[in-house]
Length: 217
Image (cartoon, rainbow, N blue to C red; front, side, top):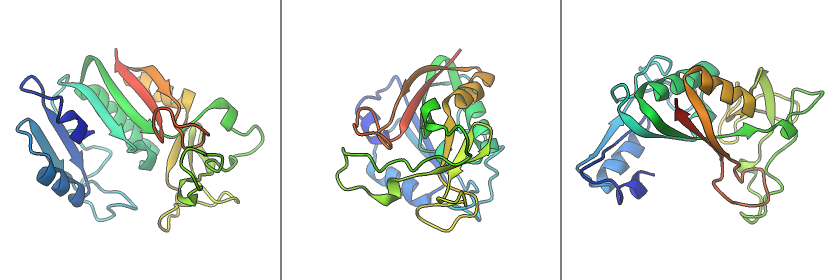
């Protein structure tokens, strides 16, 4: 997104990005030369990806003033956050957005027909994909209910799973659609559009993940 927007943003606009991974920020600074761009490396704590981080993700303030941002892009961030941290992320999004501003959230959404009636464990999603060629098991997910509306990746028996490293909680996370809509509404954000992703579908139309576009009301 940062690369693509660098071709569009001129003197009338600016871009601010932040990430806990030093390599990502260093790469961006080195490869995107734009006087209106600012990148921040923030030592945000995360149990898997930055366990020794010193910044509390539940209280961190985005590097932007109140009501100063037109567009927020959250690319597969909430897919790795605990529920309390996800709520804070939405709250900060609402704080920095101008009225009418939009937020693009790339997340896993469990639609009504994906939620089992008599179980707290879903079926395995991802094996029907045809657009990506041979199925990569790293992109197949089964979710277990952790709280109402909030699910985490799991094994067939419901035990926590991460496809890339040892994890005793479950990663990534998924949200039931109605639940995510409610979380957003509580922060003054309404769903403007929902674009189903290709992670569990036969066709690729919008993105690998589901995209929920929120508007600050």
